[in-house]
Image (cartoon, rainbow, N blue to C red; front, side):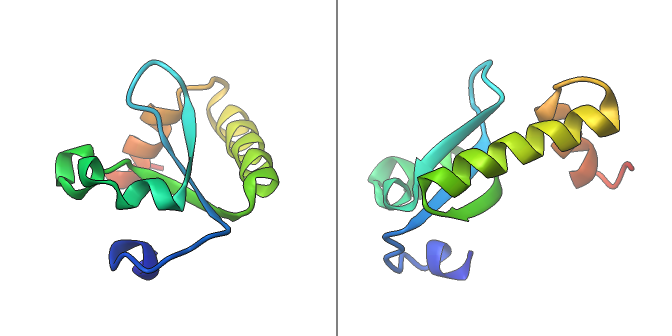
Length: 89
């Protein structure tokens, strides 16, 4: 995370974030976060995971969705992480 915040190159790292639209999660290559658009705090994605390679990113997304379903009985990923942020179990 520190390297991402400071703009260090991470050629094999993929970022999993909450989707800004109606999708559940999005996968970004870490290099995309170096674009000007993401320099503004309001445009930064809410990162929920990091993976070494696209295959691992897809696997991590699957694991996150399974965990959210097991814990909540649904797929409200945004609500799940917002609850975690506010300190709810």
